[in-house]
Image (cartoon, rainbow, N blue to C red; front, side, top):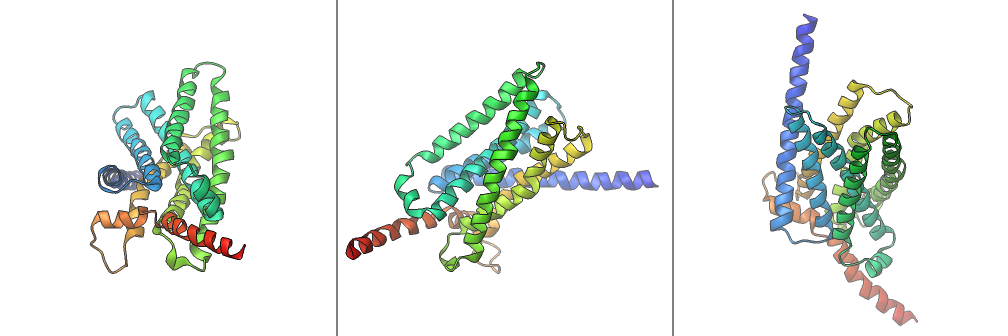
Length: 284
């Protein structure tokens, strides 16, 4: 009786997980399509497009590995998971700079910094994981793993935490909340989702490589499931944040995504700069 009950629970859980992965792939696919071919490109859409591609690779690699368990798929999964972490770190850092130092950010930001940063992130994450795989059977494998773990947990995570706090203050405690673009809210929810679902995998791997905890298949499985949920939820955050009001259930996806990724905050800051400059000139 207990075995039957446990088997039923396992089947239900597996079914829910499969649906989550399928919905995540569909959602990320829609985001990739609209950001690639429909919506006007800007610094925000460049980052989000790369994040959606990384999340899709995470979901695809795990889905394929269910039937074809190879080391290559494990490498693809972990590499793209790390890429998602680095992309979130870059997005949150840049947005926080635009909040804390708006004038400096507007004057010093390079025009094509977003695609450059995304290309560097893909290159660095692929290179680190590639070196780890190449040195897998040598004595240097653990050293490379520790370096990757330090970057992930001790450098990127504190940055994400700090940026999450700053964005929380911006979204929830600002006196001008009605003037803000929806992207700040979407980014805050995305970062909170990552802290809940994405961090456990990096934390578990780091603690394992530094011999703080033994390797446990069940714990790693739970962490992978959390990582899948993290890679699946972002598109639905964008869709829900982009809705104009709670009573309007059916809206064109293009309108929803345009509201989130229109970069209105930057435009508002750009418009405010001339006024600030002219007022400074008048007072001088």
